[in-house]
Length: 157
Image (tube, rainbow, N blue to C red; front, side, top):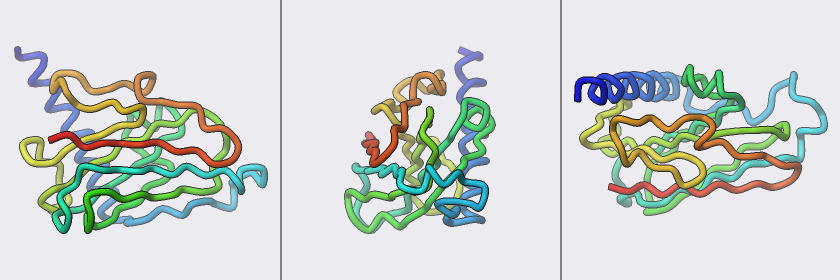
């Protein structure tokens, strides 16, 4: 029992760090000068659903490696108000490879992860169903291919 509580506490701290970072920088640029020209036409659209219209905000973080995922340092991010039950964000200029997406539905909009209120979702339809287990990069990662790519995340309350 102690181990699962500690694991969940560590997961909460990791997610909170991501939320605080994103609250400061609402939207990361879709591409940087260092992005290879071949990446320009590659996109990732993240579709999220399960929000309560007009309540809170959604933070979407894209990770381009296991190391960035484990450190909660996203390569791209975006935050938007939950004005409807569903929404989507498109990230452009991505280099093909393995990626993971973590989404936080900050229900109360306080820029902090509150495990009793807020909801987490991950790429590959992975949810935080077991509070003692933080999904790993290998569980939530997917291959981003050249062209248009889509991931869907459903928040379950």
